[in-house]
Length: 92
Image (tube, one colour):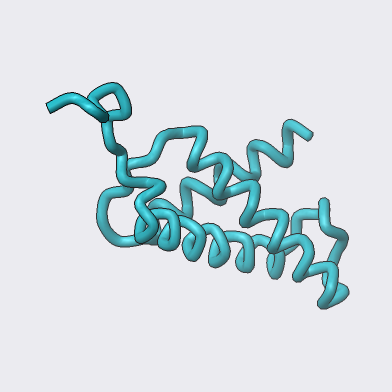
């Protein structure tokens, strides 16, 4: 389980490095995107019969990074990763 979280964090960090511009998300969002990406990558690698869902392999890793980049891009466009100060909402 710890290895899965570490891999998710690495995948999330790689996704942030590959996406141009500065992302205003924290470490937890990075971890969440990386874990989601690694789950999708593991499922696709499993479907292609290149490895198990929890097994680290090249195809799963590449798909995981691509998925994490796509998820990060969607999160930025939808405003989830906008970095607004939630304490100031409602103040003028």
